[in-house]
Amino acid sequence: KAGQSIDSSFLFYSEEMNQRAKEHLRIESELRQALQNNELQLYYQPKVSLRSGRIVGAEALLRWRHPLRGLVSPGVFIPVAEETGLILDLGAWVLEEACRQVREWRDANMITPPIAVNLSARQFDAELPKRIAAVLERHQVQPDQINLEITESLLVRGTDKVIAIMNQLVAMGMSLALDDFGTGYSSLAYLKKFPISTLKIDRSFVIGLPYEENDCAIARAIVTMAQQLRQEIVAEGVETAEQMAFLRELGCDQLQGYLFSQPVPAADFATMLREGKRLAFANR
Ligand code: C2E
Ligand code: MG
Ligand code: MG
Ligand code: MG
Image (cartoon, rainbow, N blue to C red):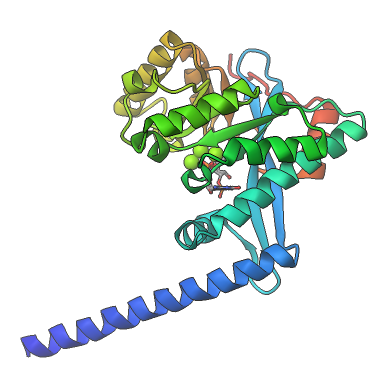
């Protein structure tokens, strides 16, 4: 009897793995087509200053409009793209599209804040600075109009090579932000080695503010030490006025989150800029 149940759970398990592998392959091949069929789109999520309440930046976030499945979230397809290496093509597309958009806004006489794009660790090779310079040049976009968000996995792998590439990007006039900070393994002391100007506190530490003591302590420690390192601090995933009030009190510089706006299509972000949408500090 016991043997039977082991067998059937084994069968069930391998069937599940089989399903996952199939799903993975399907996403991979559909994603390749998506690149060619213009099914990808960038959404923009504003970053707002906790001093002025004004929009001071935005993060470009990839969206996939699947003809049958509708909007597919990056949480589903980025991991597949990372595994298959397709992230290199996706990443190149994102950079190109962000620059094209910035240029289009400038041609329309709009003043836009810096737009941040997410970089996969796999994009981070010796050719990256040259590739980025070529895209900026092609669209006649200044390097300070595009920021780069990287993750801690890159630092942990952190060789002198990675530092050299980062230094090249900074020398070109670009700024680097460390995304999802606190979820990886790098310590703040370690951070000193890297030319990173902004830390983004991960949403998982923001959720519990201001009621979870541990989250408050972590947020406080990150902000305090980042200030010592003269880095800007952005809080991700801010959804409530209470979270905002706490972060403001701590001296956090910017917030990004549903409290102010979800990621929106380019036209909607342009409208927010034009109308001068601002964060209301209602509870203070
Ligand atoms: P991320 O870079 O940390 O982006 C922030 C994510 O948090 C976004 O999810 C955003 O929609 C979500 N978010 C922002 N504010 C809130 C909030 O108040 N509440 C909640 N619940 N969520 C909030 P999204 O757009 O689904 O992207 C997920 C992740 O996919 C990104 O995390 C990033 O790691 C990756 N990603 C997205 N676009 C790209 C890209 O172009 N290239 C690469 N390499 N990765 C990307
Ligand atoms: Mg990001
Ligand atoms: Mg993030
Ligand atoms: Mg995140």
